[in-house]
Image (cartoon, rainbow, N blue to C red; front, side, top):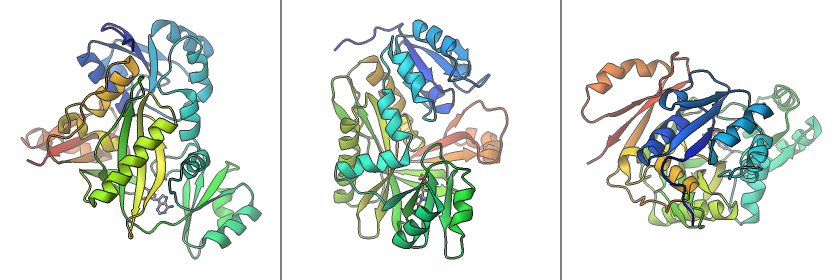
Length: 355
Ligand code: AMP
């Protein structure tokens, strides 16, 4: 296994807070980070001295970026996979474009899980109003219509309730390919972040519970209060998927735990994940340090947590509480350097360790 020596440069596709926290972890191990993002003064750019501000389709900028870095990773998944294909012609891209292609598409994600015998919500591929009508008849109401691509934080999805006109819901997607999912009456939502190194070694962080408000993650509780059997199953699923997808890096797997303790995969993200922020203080190796280790070809670090933890997102105006949080000795406060606190925007987070 050849590891990148300290002083090497990790190329980061995407400039948000996930890139920022990865860059901070990279600095601890002596690496530099060069960020590629269309956004000026991005959260990631603020903590690194190297940035390319260009469109993800700008091939001239991509080629220059590839020359300037030693390895490429990503913190944002709605990138054109072709950009990663192009970068991969000259530098290792971890995780690869093929992982991104699956994780970008809710239909491919579910098909991938099912082939491995991993459960998901029941689903139907729907492109036309007639297909949707049949799918609603099959899966019943309520059900959830989602765009196959580019959805996040509840965007690109409509609940088909008793009185919803499914045709109008599909029309609102303006021709985007869609799937209909059966409604899962879950007991709780959980996630597991698995990591895989270039030697194929896999580790996973403990299963955590995620509570959402307005479709956005509000709180993560680590570990989740689930039975040892459910915890083991959730970890097994994440470890199976990270290997089957041949990921080098991280794979966050969001899952539903049903009332009868079945574990169903909802979504995959091949990058650091909001539900893993608690690992900065809670674990010997944070998810960000783990991503740096995986893509630099270092051995993966220890993950078993020191103590239970709770992470709360600071969304929109909630970040205005920073003076109070900064004065609270039990709060580990993280702010992302975003100038404008728009509603729904993730401005920072707070982790509290439960000693
Ligand atoms: P997603 O964008 O797929 O992560 O969905 C956002 C949130 O909507 C999830 O975290 C769930 O709370 C809810 N949700 C999504 N899909 C379903 C489903 N099939 N059944 C019930 N709730 C769902």
